[in-house]
Image (cartoon, rainbow, N blue to C red):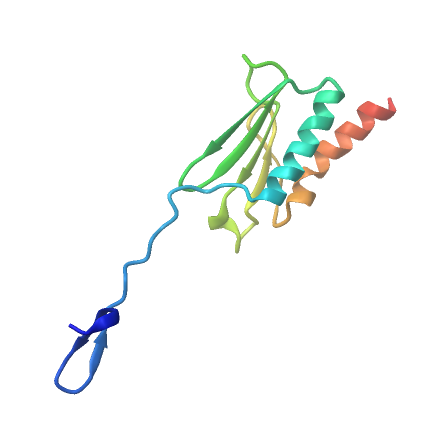
Length: 123
């Protein structure tokens, strides 16, 4: 066996590849989390949300916002990278679990919540 994982054979070297490592969980990067928490802070200031929860799994990461801690989430933002090439990795779910918006960009998926916030502040 030679250095670097190459095995010597009669006619040349054979390279043995390392097994691919899979990510143990999906998470939000710094800019995504900043964008989500900025919206959360403004919704708290408007009196709409009071609590949040984050869940990080192998397939998806989600951010849930609650009106009260003992309820179902009023909104849930999910990042599922496996859907990146299909309908987009971002999904916004409503209180009853219905899909409100899907997309490739977080900003577009958060737009219905931003619009709701603008109506609350103006009205």
